[in-house]
Length: 269
Figure 1 (cartoon, rainbow, N blue to C red):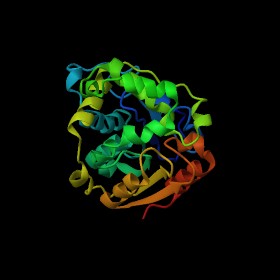
Figure 2 (tube, one colour):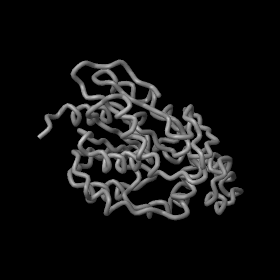
Figure 3 (tube, rainbow, N blue to C red):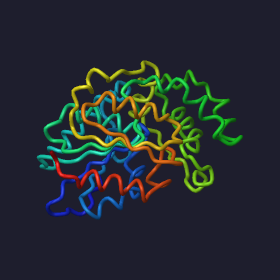
Figure 4 (cartoon, one colour):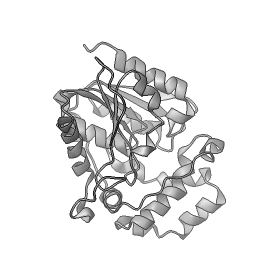
């Protein structure tokens, strides 16, 4: 777990990374500018990074991860906090907030997965034109049916080959090395969500926490996913960032951080 210095009088911000396989380094130090005005809390989801692999890792589910977030808040002795989730971490953040609404002051969702999993159907098709020949070759050689099984090496290879497609600017994508992970827990969660799909809409309609949904207009996840989040949650608004993909904290940092700072600083009704 990483905790930035406490800022007296400021509500801490829990930051939930995406990727399913990966640890908090996906968001740190990318979100470091937010730590100037509040404490940031980042952690490794169970069985990822430095977090211990739980018993029965093959049975891991994203709902288990969602249950861990309120437990972390309680363990830190916090009565309230704000929560930010990116990508799959946005889905986790929504599920955790539904369980822990009285303790979540504000929710920020950054290029989050949607409340229903149908966006997964065309992801590979839409990614291929954004990828170079070597990554296309990796995906062509990959048995996609194997992604329905919790084999960490297969899920790692798929994620690394897809990485560049998440950026709007290929030259920016080339500046970053795709993350690497062989998490058994993360692979089990990814396989379950890919194979069985999900539909959280009925559950998430109960979420009334003030929510800011940020989405890059050139993200591999279409803006329609963000609009569905706003339509599902009871108190959400959408901000679309022009010319940004899935990583607006790198692709359009000035606007990204301005939007979040303004939202978190606004008086609570």
